[in-house]
Length: 297
Image 1 (cartoon, rainbow, N blue to C red):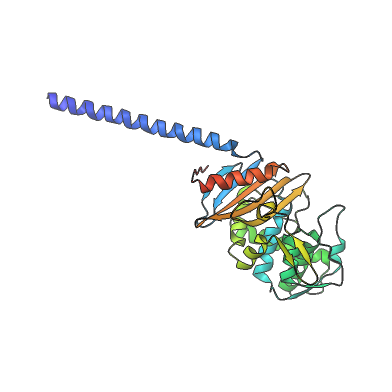
Image 2: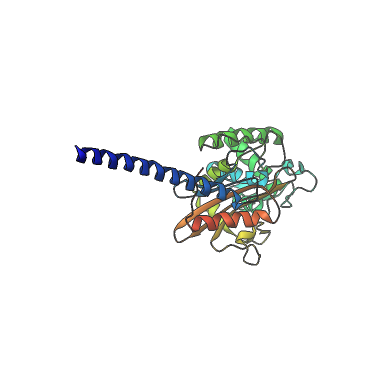
């Protein structure tokens, strides 16, 4: 009888200790998550393992924010899926639809560029004119209607953008243009942009373009605005391989970046940050990931 009572007591004590240890684990997890939120100053951020798609760190991951020119990742993805890099794209009046002080690749109506060059004009110097020309080219090709107006083509392309975003699970986003200039109905989330970037990086042409410091041929020279891949920049990051900067007054400074070390490939997204913090926010997340201090929320 005494042995039975002793056994019951031991089992009871074991249960208490087990629950206590679980409580400690939960508390440690809470502290870890809370501390991790201080990792970046930007309003929202996501760190994703590119290989698995696992979210390794998140801050306001599903908050709707303005993506600015990080929109062009999706524009490029659609163009690569539906276009041909060797196609010659005729630059039309869509490049005259510019707004004051917007980023431009200096395209003019009547020019002819290969899609290969046009995508670089869009992704490296972040030319909104190039984004419009990419969109019009894809829309006319996909609709089999070469006579649609620039406005009709841009509207058609926006439909393709939303279809593509939904198909890869970026369901908290809505796009109305190919470049990311401000529109209250044009928004995304840090998590959605990570999903879009991951999908785009499956394409070798995309990976090549966004990793280039500059592109130069006989007629064009384009410099990459992403300082993480610029070896001459104080914000250069060893192993960085892309992807896209963004800025509007409403969106703040945004950056979708990628980097690889020792076989580990990461994608980091920062939204609504400052001119200086957007770089440190991005590198902080990347370092966090490479150190394997993962936090999922």
